[in-house]
Image 1 (cartoon, rainbow, N blue to C red):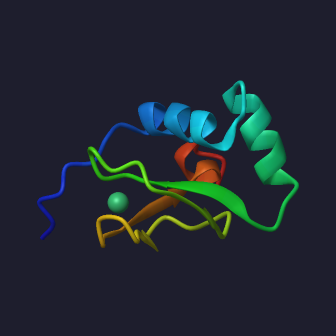
Image 2 (image 1 turned 45 degrees about the horizontal axis):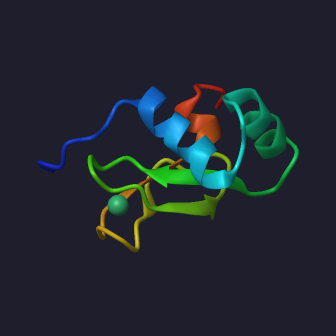
Length: 80
Ligand SMILES: [Zn+2]
C-alpha cells in the first residue's frame, strides 16, 4: 500500500499547463490529442515533475520522487 498523498487532478492539470507554457487546459489537450506523446505530471503531493509520456499513461516513473505516479494530461482530464 502506498501512503503517498495524491493531489487533486484539476490542480495538477493547471500546474501542467503552466509548466508546458499553455494558457489554458483546452490548448494543452488540443496539442496532446494531435501528438504521439502527451504532457504528463507526477500526482504526488508536493512533487511537480513533468515529462512527455504515452497519452494513456497513468503510472509513469517519476525521476523526482521515484514513484510510479506520472499521469498524462489526457488521463487526468478523463479523455482516455
Ligand atoms: Zn514525483
